[in-house]
Image (cartoon, rainbow, N blue to C red; front, side):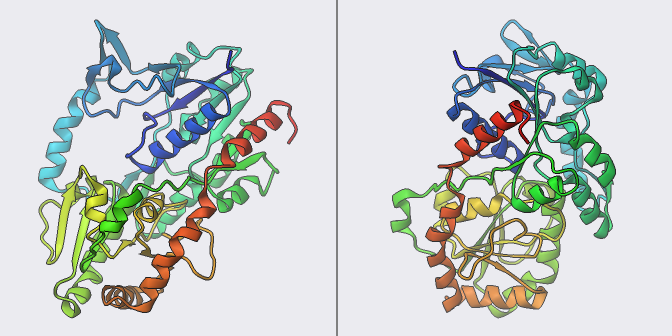
Amino acid sequence: MCPEITFITERMPRTGSSGAESYNYYICQLLLKAGYQIKLIVTGDNFDTPCFINSTYENKELFKQTYFIRYKSIFGVTVSVSFKSYLRPIKKIISRLKNNNSDKKDLMIGRFITKQEAEACLKYIDPNSKFVIFDTIFRYHERFTTLDNPKILIAHDVFSERTKSFNEQGFKVLPAIEAEVEAKVWDEFDLHVAINEDENQLISENDKRSVCTIFPSYQSSLNSVLKLRKPKNKILYIGANAHHNIHGLRYFLAEIWPKIIHQQADAELLIIGTIAASFHSEKHSGVSFLGRVDDLCEVANECKFSINPVYMGSGVKIKILDYLSLNLPCLTTTVGIMGFIRQADMPLIEVADDEDYSKKIIDWLSDGDDLAIAINSIPNYVKLFGAENNSLRLAGCMLKALNNDN
């Protein structure tokens, strides 16, 4: 019988969603491949509706059991016990009408679970579970110090660095995470899973904590469809309705895009994702907000390349791997390229400033040599992110943690 692992997360791990959710899904796939069964405990109520059929979000191929601690099951329907979840759809409508996401200066980067939620989780944790895995420091509570099970942190980010980055852009972060507080939480874990080597170094540098780096895997979504590619003067941007995306895209549309349209009148920026909700009342020449699309490949095939104008935050921007899976090179910023492996020929190009950004976009729209070099570098570059060894690496790190061999 396969050994059991308990995974505590705020949102359901799933593909085609935000970076955190898709990365958790990938980690769960690696655990399954390593021979573990996964018991999932979901602490959040961030679903599309406050109630749903039980089977809607269950993934029995990936998870042995799934528990939603802020929901109750009534006659086959999972119903939220949180009054706020029923108000959320109304708040979203009001927020959209006011378009108040754009000027928000108080940014939520996480939610620490409550003592009551931690105690609810403890009811589902088997003492024989080989490990208990926590999705970010926000899922941890002092009530879990009673656990004898080895504990693993899926770090996702160094949140004290994210707090610092957002503060530098004039935003107030809630909850604000200080380095000392974060380090204290890190000390509670037997193993840390970092998303890149920079994060690994920050976590391990002081106390030589046991850290395993699992970079998100590249997965091609195109196959033979690339043969049909007929790119036009179109650029792709994909973004969730998150603070750093809104901030970066709004700046790009105000300061950089007008220069591009002035020189290349037929240029078009195609924007995919929930970020459209924060721009619904705005009009920009040559910009199309497509929201969610059924066939991302079809849209990508019309585009020459992608952009990620992000100016705050930390950690790997998983959307860039999405771009590479679509065979689209990317022009991005210093923050956007953070955590990616640097080499001579690569499909990610870091721009120096606004003028450099507009200049490189114009050059790529004109089919400059640098665009061809970037596209041709994708096949070799993505080999760096193959999944072949990640399962063995993770299993090996877990075994060392189990034996206290750090």
